[in-house]
Amino acid sequence: MCRHAAWLGAPRSLTSLIHEPEYGLLRQSYAPRLQRHGALNADGFGVGWYDANGTEPVRYRRAIPIWTDANLPGLARIARSGCLLAAIRSATVGMPIEETATAPFTDGPWLLSHNGRVAREAVRGLADSAESPCDSAWLAAAVFARRRAGHPLGDALAEVVIHAGTEDPKARLNLLACDGTSIAATVWGDTLFLHLDDGVLVASEPLDDRPGWQAVPERTLVLASPDGVRIQPL
Image (cartoon, rainbow, N blue to C red):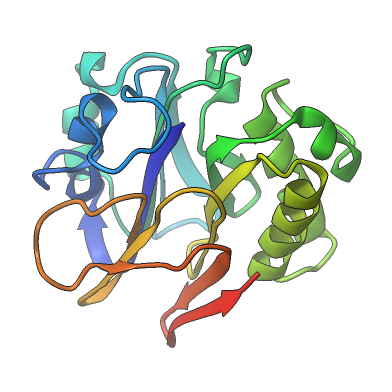
C-alpha cells in the first residue's frame, strides 16, 4: 500500500505535509494509523509543487525510505506553494523498487499518486506506454493520456478507475492528482480524508488530531478548486 497527501490553498511549505504534523507522512512511513494493507512505507517517496514562475511542477523523488534522506527536511522547508503533493510508497509484491516506479508521476502540468494495487493487465490497454512496469505508472499513463485528449482531470481519473476496478475487482484505486489550480482524488478500496481551513487538505489519513477531518465515502470522486469541494459517486 502507500500513503499520500495534497494541499490546495494559501501557500504552504512541503514540511506541512511531511514533518510538521504529528502524524505527517514522515511518521506514516513507519507508523501509519489507518493503513489497511501493510505497516511500513519504506520503498520510496516523492514530492511535487508548483513554482510561481512556471506552469509545470517541480518534482523530487527517491527510491529510499523517506527518513533516510538528509536533504529532504531542508528542501521541504523552502519548497512553498499553493498546490502541493507528497507520497510515500509500500511497493506491491513483484513491483520494482526504483525512482521511475515512485509517485508522484508527472506529465506536463499534472502530478499523480496511487495508493493501492491493480493487475497491470487491467490498465495496460488504456495507455500506449508507461515510464515503469509498475501498476501505478500504468494507471498514471492512462490518466495522462485522457487528460491530453481533453478530458477534465476528474473525468480522466473516474474513467480509468471505473475501468480498472471492473477489470480487477480486487483492485485498490485511491488516486490523487493535481494541476496547480485543482485537486482530484478517488476513493476505491482504502481511506481518504478531507480537512478545510484556508484551503483544502486531502490525505490518506488525518495528519493530526485537530477537529474537522472528514472521512470521504467509498467509491467517490473528490474535486477541489478555489470555488470549493465537491464529492460525487463513482
